Amino acid sequence: MFISSLKTRLEITNIPPDYFPATPRFDNYLTVWASEVDPASSLLATAVIALGATLLVLLVATPAAYYVARFRFPGRMVFLLLVLCTQMLQPTVLAVGLFQEFKGWQGYAVWAALILINAAFNLSFAIWIMQAFFASVPKEIDEAALIDGLGRLQTMFRISLPLVWPGIVTAIVFVFVNSWNEFSAAFILVQQTNLQPLTVSMPRFLGLYIKDWQYLFTVAMIAIVPVVILFSFIERRLIGGLTAGSVK
View (tube, rainbow, N blue to C red):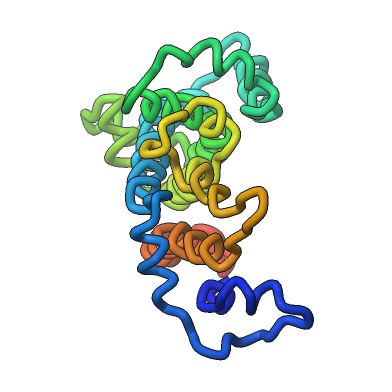
C-alpha cells in the first residue's frame, strides 16, 4: 500500500504493473492533504468518534462487567445472552431505523450520534471480555479490601482494575479499531463532506470515469498511522495479558 501510494495512476494501472515506481511521488501526500477530500478534517472526525465511543464503552462496560462477575442475581444468564445477541446485529441491518432515529442530528451533533451507535454495537463484547477477566480474580481479594474499609467502588477501581488491566486493554483495542473502521452508519448519517470520517471520504477518489488509486492508497496510509501508534503504546500490556500465567 505504501509503495502504491508513491506511484502515478498510470504506473498502477499499467499492464504488466511495475512493483516499484520509476520515481517515488512523495508529493502525492501533499496533493491529497490539499485536496477537496480534506483528510485532516476526516482524520479529526474519525479520531473524535473512535475515542468518544471507546471512552463511553469503558465508562459503561467496566461497572457492568464487574457487577456481573461478582454478583449472582435473578436473570443473570438471560442478561448475558441478551447482551451477546446485540453482537449479532450490524448497522447495515438497522440502516432504516438508525436513519429515522438520528436524521435530525445535524452539524457536529452527528458525531455524537456516531459515538452512541459505535458504543452500542461494541458494548456487548467489552462486557463479555471484561467480566471474564473480573471473574478470574478471586473474590477473597475484594472481601479483604472491604474488610479493610474500602467501599465497593474503591475496591473496583483500586483493587480489581489493576489486576484485570489486560482485559481493559483488549476491550480498548477492539472498540477503538471497530469504531475507527466503521462505515455503514457514517455513510448513512453524515451528509456534510467536512464532517465525514475517513472511511466515508476515502472512496471519493474513485470516480465514475477516473479512479485515482494512488491517492486512495495515500489516504489509507494516513488512516492507519494512528492505529499503529496506539498499538505501539499498548503492545507490551496486551502481550503481557495474553501470556499471563503461562509460567506458573
